[in-house]
Length: 103
Image 1: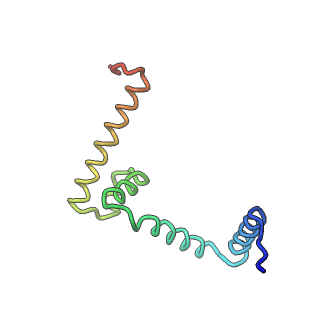
Image 2: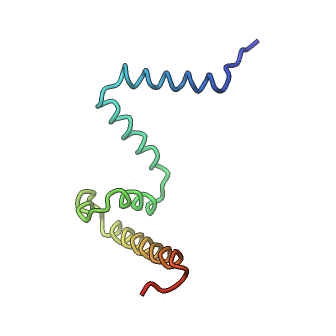
Image 3: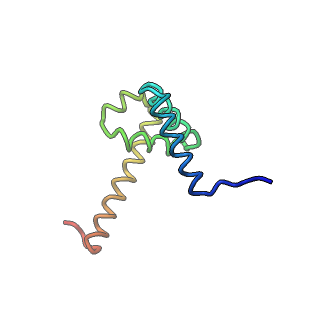
């Protein structure tokens, strides 16, 4: 016969264990490494366009193009993403303005 832990108690156990592991066994370097691994794992299945969009959303400074050593092809994709984003912003502004031209 298998005893089951209630969902609420299970969540409490997991939360307490996570707090213990972070506070008692990890230093800042461990936390940074773990965060970097989790971010990287979340990006593995992204398409090329999604990857570049994710990067450019978080690094909107023009210097980021130098930092990341984007190729010519990468830059072309980024430019297309930027155009779509600007078009989306303009459409959103028009929609929020009651559908009237902003000029």
